[in-house]
Image 1 (cartoon, one colour):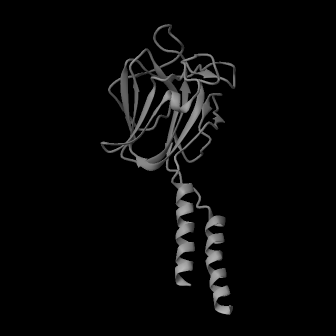
Image 2 (cartoon, helix red, strand yellow; image 1 turned 45 degrees about the horizontal axis):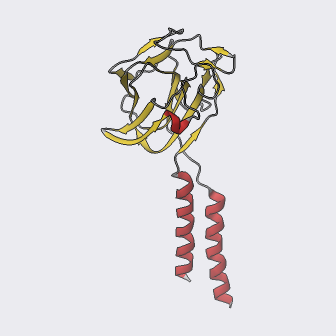
Image 3 (cartoon, helix red, strand yellow; image 1 turned 120 degrees about the vertical axis):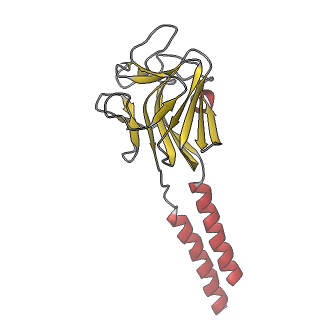
Length: 212
């Protein structure tokens, strides 16, 4: 009977782990005070690229800008307002930018991703170890760089199974633009109902064995 109970408990833990450990990408968002798309997670820290910015380090390239310059960069299209973002945002051209979060460990990242295309790459690092990477066409479809489509201008949320302390945004063409960059530590709820249910099966088996 101990074997049955142990097996049920291990099965419960494995199922719990399979739920908690899965990488997850979502597209939910909130509307910020300036009417831009931002994270819906109140516990996340957000860089709006306007005032009151967090003390993160941006290195190797990129610039804070606003508006659209043909052949250079385009403000993310805001589907909520049906117009382009009028606030400041971050743009990368033919370069890569490494963003370090002051040594803080995070497993969540969100960004208002503008005119996403297949050459946009986001890489997650823990120290010098690459733990995950995503191309634009793995996240948004179609990722064709359309500047005025709600399909290619979305708020994207990444929930990782491992912690990261820096992220690289890579682009070897005209531009990679984003606003309202957010990070934080996401604590996935353990599926208690599944866990307790399977443990219950173990005790039920034990009871049947005892009185059989």
